[in-house]
Image (tube, rainbow, N blue to C red):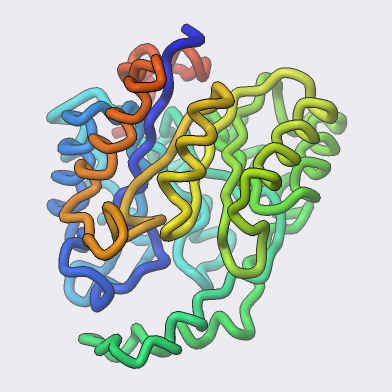
Length: 308
């Protein structure tokens, strides 16, 4: 299915705060509704974070996850990729808890530590915060390291393997490809791997075509065959996803990564971004994979084997 492209919608994430966009889904119902709307527009995967429904603070509450995943599954067969990145500052145990709890087909797996910085957003003097936590949450990232040590990765691999959950390996920087090779060699990871090149985070690799090509070629030389996708922060989202389409890769869009549909135009939903990248893909001769086609491409265990 080389002409098929897996489109992922990252629904809400843990980066943007409610004051940045009135369209950012916060409650479990809003998150579930957005996942279903993304599926209707051609997304095969929805990447799921949850938030406190009262104030939008990113959290790792399993009851909120349960409400979202059961709400989505009852309405469509989209693949649910649960986050193990969680919210900034969450413990390792809190982050990975979704894997044994829900045994999802797919879950994110951050493959190295980085300076994950959001504090620079505070330079926008026009941003007026609705909730007290927002400014502190963003500001603390000036002195924050997103920790994913080799010990953490080894422990995560055990959880993924025990629950037959496919890891989506998040690659923010070049050294993380070497981390993947090491964990494969030690037998903690299994081939074929699914990589997602994450571009444009302050503290990690800039979102440029040259960097994407370098990542791809390095991964090919180091790992051999693999399946891959691209996501990029902010204004780089559509450009980098289009480059991935041209190179034969898969794509991720969504309000986790970018709040805009185009310059100066805020996205009203995740579905709008999905529809845009699907249109671009079709103009380039690539058709969006259905969830079941994506399951075949990624070698997933199937929706009947999840615990929700």
